[in-house]
Length: 185
Image 1 (cartoon, rainbow, N blue to C red):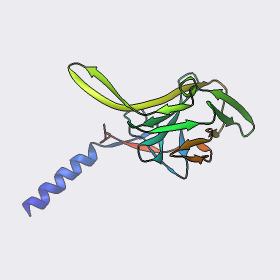
Image 2: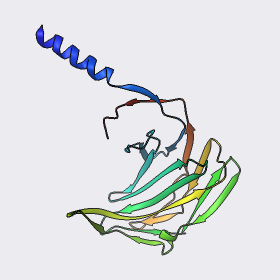
Image 3: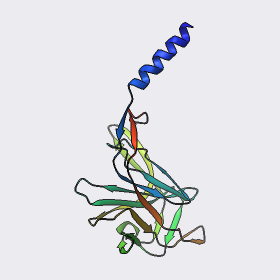
Image 4: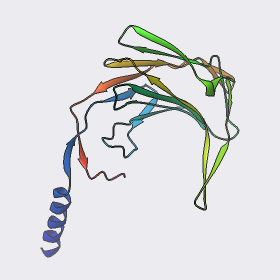
């Protein structure tokens, strides 16, 4: 009896420590081959990153953030492990917003069109961190994008096979709450 009462008190205190806070609006990425997750401790957990596994050791990552001045930043790129390679048929992505307007944006990181994996080592305060090679870029969008933004990446070749992904779709979400404190931070 004492143990169950103690457990009940602990659980009550834990729940009292959590509060619901409005999350605000954000853009949720969708793709049939991808997994979207927040994985960050930004102010409202609004940085939702989409990861698409192209092949073992090759992923595409993207997210869309609204800035404080009302513009948007789209980050998109490939992450490749050592000894992996991807051949792009173009260095440009197509961005469609407001259901009609579209942009064709050339990415400097993709200019060579053959992206080769590797390991990047970074030293910080005596520690060495290793990361897989990343070819990503941030794109600033100053126009209003409405409720939906679609991103089409170029056709590419991996392990001798040509592939074309269906467009990545970002849909505006709002009205949700998050519970604080965040346990993943």
